[in-house]
Amino acid sequence: MKVGVFLKTINTIFLALLMGQVAVFYFIKGFNYKELLAFNFQDINTLHLGITFGAIVLAYILYNANLKKIQTDEGLRAKFTKYQTAMLIKLAILEFAFFFLLFVEETNALYLIVLLIVFIFQRPTKHKIAGDLKLNTDEEAILNKDEDYLV
Image 1: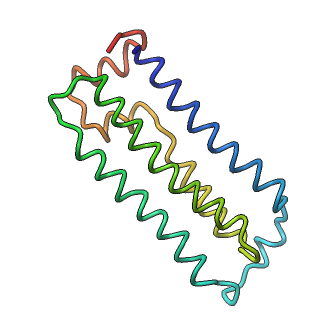
Image 2: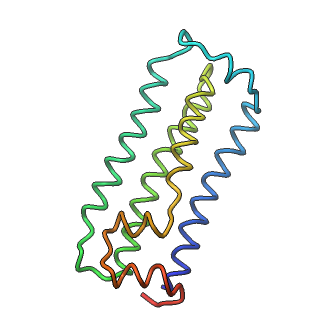
Image 3: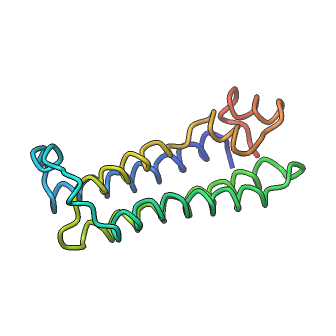
């Protein structure tokens, strides 16, 4: 696998998941900025709040647990594969919570917006990948410098 192919693949998956959420949100809820501005604290539903923040916490816990399974002496290809799996699990949890709340009656759009914002900040970049995988300087140089390098 080439490093460039890995980066394109993981970013394409991320973008496809994000665009799916945005498109379905727009078609079901529409963009009603008045609903967002009219939010008051009486609209807080503890179940929806629990699902939103529970999904965020669960996604991070499982993501970090999967990253801890990656050995520092493994090859770059194995690290990338395990990273991609951990990332997909994290994104799937956030996306499931988003769609669950989207199809529940009377869900305030603010919960969906929070999940979308958290999802957007999960975008895999070279810097995040290197930091999360704790790559050594040689591996980081491969990731940053030569996208055609075979791993």
